[in-house]
Image (cartoon, rainbow, N blue to C red; front, side):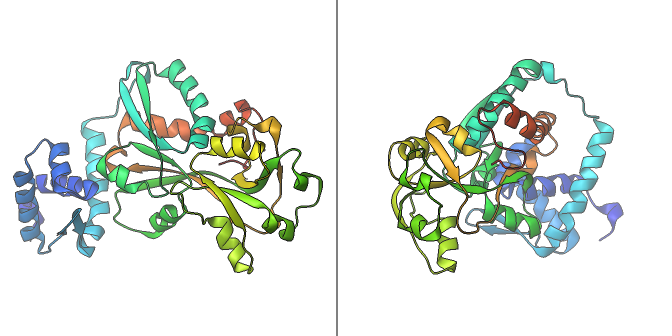
Amino acid sequence: MSFLTLDLNLLRVFDAVMTEQNLTRAAGHLAMTQPAVSNAIKRLRESLGDELLIRTAYGVKPTPRAEALWPSVRSALASLEAAVAPETFDVSAAHATFRMAMADATAAFWLPSLMRSIEREAPGVNVRMVPLTTREPRPMLLRGDIDLAVGFFPGVAAQLSYETGSPIRHERLYSGHYVCVMRRDHPLSKVDLTLDNYCKANHLLVSFSGRAHGLVDEALAQIQRERRILLTVNQFFTAGRVVANSDLITVLPRHLIASTGMTDALISKELPFTLPAVHLDMLWHERDARSPAHKWLRMHLEGMNTVAQRTAPGSAPKNDTY
């Protein structure tokens, strides 16, 4: 294959298909028909002597050659785009709608500051919140159901940190730690929280799926202990209400105590065992990586940690957030 005879338009199609992992969605992005996209990929296969993309039940899967080629193609196309069509973005005149997925407490912590920024700087920008009911938001991003996911996605973040060729991008916003939360007049509030009295208590678990097993249970299993989960709920606000009015105890990232709206009725204690840090990650799709409006949104989320802590009632010390 001679580079001089290669149709460079094929690389634009290749980039779109790699980004979408689906021929139909790539065709829509390129304003082409699906057969035209298939034909372009066929011609590129013949030119490069590699299958490049293998059809699956959910779209296409890149070959190792395609994964190795894509970063260079994407970088080259981005450089050409910046040279030919320099980015101009007037946020005050922009009109955009962002679909975002967060857990209820994360949204309560972040949205007030974001809304103030939008009202002040971007009056034409709208936000539509989508329920986050899973620790695996990648399918929502791949389908285009949402533009951004923000939350605690430990398995996804770990996989993306070493995976190549994924169209999902991510960035860690900040980290914090877990504490045990109970009502102020709970019997355990007046004594040291030992491992024994912690395990003997009745527990509430915030679980999106309703599965009565979480990070705490994995940590306890490592030291041959267990707890009784009397109740699972799928909202942090509900968790705060129940714990404030019962003898159940729960485990939350420290700053989410404020997000429950029950700060005055709750206290926190350090856990009598060790848990990993809780991280807040932001995930988005490659298709939006160069969008000026999307960049503006991500930039604000990156810079809102200090603002959110300063303005949230009962906010936590720096770096103790979720």
